[in-house]
Length: 196
Image (cartoon, rainbow, N blue to C red):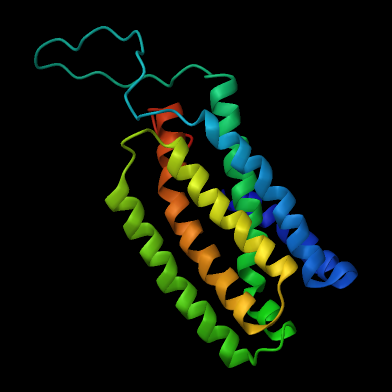
């Protein structure tokens, strides 16, 4: 996850210099769309997949085998996660600078980011309350749509109000979506090695 954001970071400065904030967020919007489209294949639950391991004898212990390559479902999950974190990694480190470019002072921009972190806490709390009664795909789609909408607000809006709404929506959506992404990855690889 962090690698996707780190890989995207060198591109940020070039995009911002060449196309400004709107070009930067246009790129983020383009990266958000594949993640949103891949959400439909999220598994409905984290029920363990059969491993073919014989039952453990009474009192004995066995090691959990490394699962075989899971193919396309795991690849889709990894691709969706990579797109999501590329977008997060491209936006969040530069949020304060974007606010300044849109007319906020550095202090105002930092204040908005502080409020966005509170919005993120609200998103994480909502994810904990909602859970996944109908599978992970609906909440993933909701959160990814919110992230995409936040990019649209930055690209199409201007000024303090649009920046504040976009950053708060982004923070809320990011932390709402994150538990469902981890749950999806865990469901695709019950050993947990993919998430770790």
